[in-house]
Image (cartoon, rainbow, N blue to C red; front, side, top):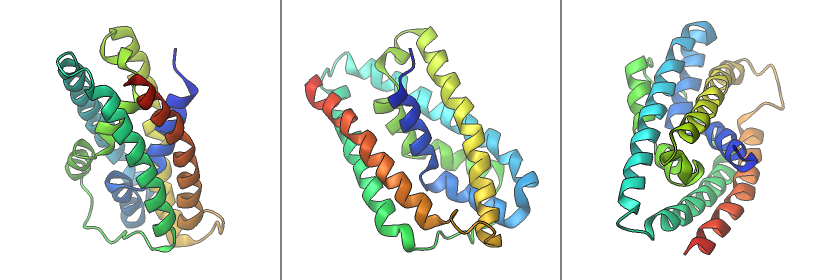
Length: 197
């Protein structure tokens, strides 16, 4: 069973600015939506590989270090709160979209090394996803189905930022809304971690 918390955290974290999303928005600015669509598979495969590798690695290590999963969950909750505060503070600063021309390889590497991958693997995906193949495929399938439209929206967001056609769709409103949602979702994650010790 997939929880609302899982879906909500995935969507919110994927919407927060980070290395991958900045590159997608930059590509939207530089070459437009249509030509930037070729970057989306790079993000999909980058996250698929990184989350899967981290998830199975952490699950195998947790058999020897039983306190590791709750500790990582607690750190993840703290990291989410940090992201929320950072988003709020930097909501009036411009995102630097003056990146060199983005290649699929560069986006793949940025996604592979994105710290969000370990956050997803250690705290957002349920532990059963790393133990039961069916649970892995259900949760990973849902995750991958959410990445594609959100990546598209980041590309479109880059093109809209330049055109200023939609006044309410701006960086400040996007980041402050994400900050509220992240703070809201961090609380049950922290509670779950604390009660697991």
